[in-house]
Length: 455
Image (cartoon, rainbow, N blue to C red):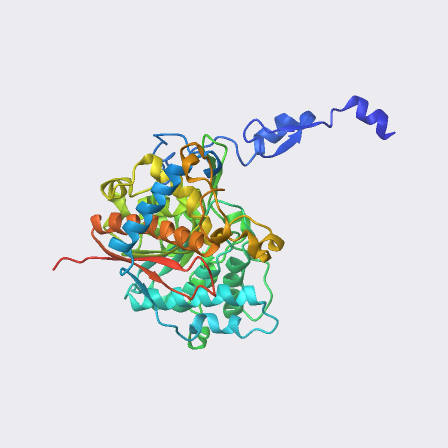
C-alpha cells in the first residue's frame, strides 16, 4: 500500500528555495513556500541589510599552516612590542565580589555543575560591574547583545526593571533558541497576577516587572492585560538576502504604547542588520546600556556599531561586553582598523593575528598523550635557522606551550585594545579589565565604556 502511494506522490525532500539550510517535500513545495519562515516579506524599519557589516576588503585570509614562518615571527614581535608599550598596564583586575543578589537563588540551587557555577559567577560579576559604573538608571533599556537563552537578561530584569523604574530588557539573538528564561519571567508575572493556572502566553516577548513581594499585592488589570493570548501578539517575520530569518516581537501588541512601557522583548535578528535606535523598545526609553557575556568574534564589532551609530549614540549611556572567540573576527567589520593601522598593524598582520589568538585557549594542537612527553617540548627542539625563509606554518616556530598561550592572550588583548581606542574616539571613557580569574574562564577580559557627559 505504502509503495503504491509513493508512486503517485513525490515524497522526495529538496532544499528550500528561500533558505537551503532546511528542506521540504517536493510535492508540497508550493504550500511550503506560502508559509516558510524564510520567505521574503516586508522588513521592519530597524532591519537594514549589512548596516553594521562593511564589505570585506584586502588580502584573503589564510590559515597559519599556509603562512610563511617569517611573517608569523614578525607578527609575534609586533604583538609583544605593542602589548608591552600600550596595553600591559592598561588592563585592570576587578576585585572579587560575593554572588549578586539577583543570581544568588540560582547559585544556591542544589546539583549545579561546576561549569554552571562558573557561568553564574561571570554573570554575577558583570552585574556588579554595570552597577559600579553607574549605568543603572530609570527608564533605561538594557540590551543583551547575542542574548542566547537570556540568562543575563533575566538577572538584569530581576535587579533593575521594577515597575517604578520604567526600565526594560531587550534580548537580541539571531538563533532560534529555547526561551526558558523568557518563559520564567512570564511565569513569575502570571503567578503574581493570579493564583490560578492560566493558558495565556507571551511567546518570545518578555515582560519587565519587579519580582518584589511588596509589589505582589499591587498587581492590577494593567499588568494582566500585558499578558496576551498568542493569537493577539503582533509578530512580523522577514528574511535577508542570505535567508536569515528575522523574527520580530519587539513592536508588541497592536503598537500599544501603554503596554510597551511595561514590557521588554526578545528580538530575533542578526546584529549585522540591526538599527538599534529604530527598535520600538529602544525608542520609548531615555537611555540604552549594552551588555553581553562571551560575545563571539565579529558580533562584538556589530554590537559596537549598533551602539555608536549616529541614531543610537545620543541614548547610549555605556556598555559592558565580555569578548571571546577573536579568531572569528572579520577585518571588514572590525571597528578599529584605523587605530591598528596607526599602531603598525596592516591587513596582512590582522589576518595572521586571527590565527594566533587561538593559541590563548586552544593549546598547541597536540594530543594529551603527546603533551605528557617532555621530549616534544619546544625548548628541546632544534631546527635549521638557515631554512626559515622557506618554512611555512608554525612547526619550526620554537615556542613553548606557555609562550604560545601568552602570545595568544596578548594578540586577543591587542584586538580589544583597538576597540577601546575606537570607543574613546566615539566619546566614551573606555578601558579593559579582567572581570574574573582565568580559572573561572580563559575568556576573562571585558570592555567597559561609559559615555562622557560634557558639563
